[in-house]
Amino acid sequence: MKHNLSYVHPSANVAPSAYVGPHSVVGVYSVVRENAQIGENCRLGKEVLVDGNVRIDDNVQVEDGAHLNTGAIIESDVVIGSRVFLSSRAKKTSGELKGNRTIRICHGAYVGADSVVSAGVTVGRFAVVEPGSTVAYDVPDHALMLGTPARQVGYVCSCYTRLVEDAEGSFKCPKCGEHYQRVISADSGRYAELFSPRASFNAQR
Ligand SMILES: [Zn+2]
Image (tube, rainbow, N blue to C red; front, side):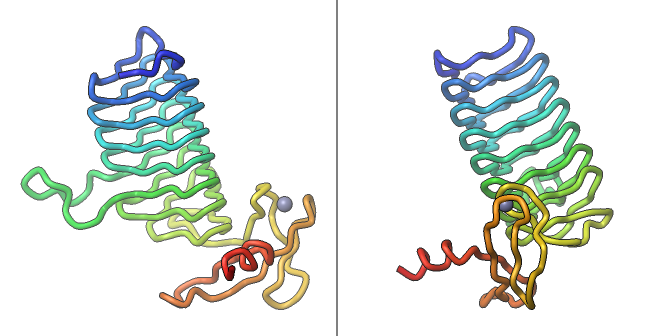
């Protein structure tokens, strides 16, 4: 079903059980399969595949030829570049997806063109995956990832500018001036997470 304020190109194919929200656009030859949910104000380019049960929140841009496979969750304000492949099809047993193989691309993240994200991976908020990367493990918030397999090469601001470390564990955005502090995640200790002072202040209240 499509909201009457959405636009689906006549050559595109949207399953009757899928939903396309208001002010969203589904481009030429794109396919939206069963029970996929697309929020408001999204832009799907040409020949995009949105597989069954994929959830796309509001203000998401998916560029030409990207494949979002079964069950992927794309949070708001995400950009998925051209020909990105979000794999959720690995390890099928008797037709069911085995274990938790859901890909989650968190709010504000950017996945560059021709990148591959493996099944089960979470890409953190405002993380940037450089074009042509292969992401096999979870990506921290604000991380800048590059290569195959992708390695973290720095941090980016929520304005997508690379952060500069101005003191041990303290980072500043040269463009918008926002400050960030590095803290090690208490649950895993596997990687550093960044919080702006304002965000951590709010979280304590
Ligand atoms: Zn900034």
